Each structure stands twice: as structure tokens, then as C-alpha cells.
Image 1 (tube, one colour):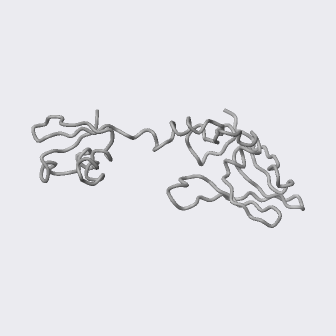
Image 2 (cartoon, rainbow, N blue to C red; image 1 turned 30 degrees about the vertical axis):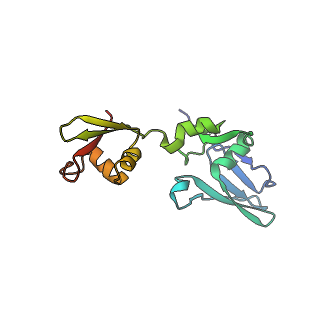
Length: 175
């Protein structure tokens, strides 16, 4: 497979002061014609994940924007009403044009909501080894049995030496 040549295009609304490449890079174009590739950064906090941000200045005002939004608006166009920008391969740090697309918010929620993958049914097991109850998630099991979520997770994963020490039941994940 041939490597994709970085192809640069002016970012709309910045009068040729900034450019974006098809590979997800952003650069500043000076009046002299020289360019400097800008280094994106990650914000701290879980809500931002690995998403990359950059600062762009227009009319003396600095604006913080995600690199994915800049690349999408430069090469694909503005986000249509009712749709959301998403990364096709799920990697929010991969801002290549080929990896960006638009999708309905409901579909995006189905793909990524609560990481949509990891909710597993939890079985409550009595000391005789019988399934007593089924819960849709570890959180529901914890709430109904007045214990912490982490306690339920530890029991499901077998991280307790004696799972029946304090209670006459334990938990396990659906197989």
C-alpha cells in the first residue's frame, strides 16, 4: 500500500492562515510563506479521552477546537444537522480524512454509549451453587443487594478468597 502524501488545504474561515492535511495534521502559514506544523494536545480528564485539540487564532481571538472537527470541515464539510462527527475505526486520535464520517446521534450512541460492549448479565449464586437471581448488570446487582459495585465485580472475577465469608451468596458473570 502506498503511503498517503500529505495534501494540504486551507482551513475555511481563517483566510489561508492555517491549513489541514488529509492525514490529520494542522499547520500555521506565515505571511513569508514559511509553515510550522502545530502540535495537538490532549486535555486532562476522562471525558476527553485521547481526543486531540489545537488552538487557532482569528481576529485576535484564540479558539480551542478538536483536530477531527477541523479536518472534517476542511475536507468533508460542516456537520449536517442531526448528525455527529465520528471516527470510523473508533480511535479518536486517528484524524485522517478516510477515518472521519457523519452518523446520526442515536446510531453513534448505540455504537459507543457506555462503551456499549461491556454490560454483562450477573448471576446471584447461593452457597449450594444454585442460580438464585439474574441481574442485567453488576450495578443492578450491587444496588439490589446493598453492597458496593466493586464488591460485585470482584466476586464475579473470582478475586475474593472466600466468596461466601460475609454473605450466603456470591456472583458470577453470564458465560
